[in-house]
Length: 224
Image 1 (cartoon, helix red, strand yellow):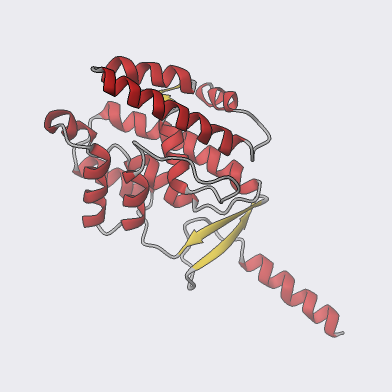
Image 2 (cartoon, one colour):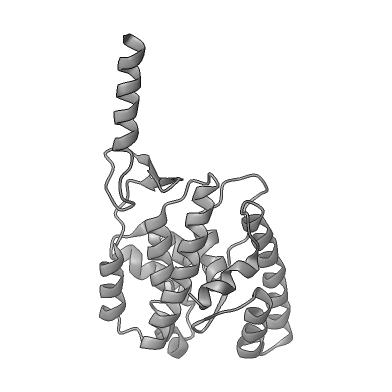
């Protein structure tokens, strides 16, 4: 009898964990079980999708940059969900918010010359979203974590951004060729981009080592 009571309690507890990704949790973190995935949901103040679009509108982000952010969010959330299915613990809402807002000050930086990752992070800090700010601050430079360590949300957003050329999903090689054409104005900048490309290739291997498909699978999202 005690054994069956235990099973009933366990079944009830399992059902209570099937929350939507954005539901608040009364603990420092919780685990969300949905569609075969187990993902972490930190107890953080995160902007939902509607609030992300409000922030983009409030900062008068041009439509072509918004479209780029949407495509990066598509790639990032696809990867995050796939990694969750393989046992990684990721906050899907944080990944989506970081992807949608990563270029929120890009249009201003084109005039001022400032680092748009840092200016965007500063803006999000002021708005009360420090965890999103941390992800956004890393989207220009994000070295891969050590082998065997958990995948971080900022790694996913950084990599997703490096797979989207304007509003089109491309290979890593094509994306960096475009970056060289636009920003390789000196020998030092070309060397820096080559170094960044090699680091990003390492990150690509780190991500897809955990997945049942390869990097080329992302190209199919373009047709979806």
